[in-house]
Amino acid sequence: MSKPTPDIEELEDYPERSSEPEPTADEQEPESWAGWNGRSSKIALAFAVNRDQQIVGAGDACIDCKKRTDPKTGKPRIDTTHQFHALASKDPATGRWTGPEGEHLETLRALGHLRNTDEARSRAEAELRIAALRGVERDDHCRQCGEPIPDRGPECKNGHKNGLESLRPLTTQQLRKQWHRVLKGGPAALLENERRQRREEVERLREAAGDIGREIAIAIKESLRDTR
Image (cartoon, rainbow, N blue to C red):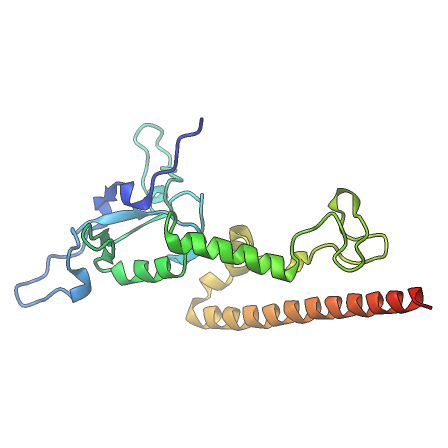
C-alpha cells in the first residue's frame, strides 16, 4: 500500500529561506502578517503555477529544495511532497495563511491551486464538467450519429470526430513548453504571451465550433436523406 500524501498543514516548516531582517521598533508589520511564525512553509500544489520564473505543478520536485545539496549524495535534494517554499504560515485559529506571502497563498487557494483544499477539489470537478460539455473525451458511440466506435477510436465510420482533444486543459508540461522562452524575456514578453494565449484559445474554440457545425450539418443531411 502506498504511503498517503500529507496535507499541506502537515508539512514541516522550512526555516532556511526566512532571511528577512528583523523589523525595527518604528516599523509595524502589516495586519495580514498577524499570526505569522516567522518561518517559511512547504507548499503542495494541485494545479500548476508560475513560481520564480518557473512553471511548477503537482508532483514536480520542489524548486527550492533543488537549490540545496544533499550531504549524503552531494547532489541537489529532490522532494516531490511539495513544490516550493513560501514566507507564510497557517494561522491555527482561522486556517488562513499569514505572513509576507500570506495573501498570495490565499489567492492561490481561492483559485484552486493548493493541494488538499476544498477549492482544488471544486476546480477539478468543474474541469471535468467543462470537459464533458465540450465533448473532450472519446466515447464508445458517436455523439452525432450514434454509431459504435471500436476501441474508442478517433472517429466513427461516418467520419465524425470522437472527442475534441484540442479543448483539453493544458498539462504542466505543455505550459512549461509554452512559457519556456517567455519567462526569460521579462514583463513585456509575459504580457505578449498572455495575449497570444487568449488569441489561441479563441481560435481553438472557433475551430471546435466549426467542427460541431459541420457535423450537425452532415447529421441533418443524413436524416433528410433517410426520410425520403
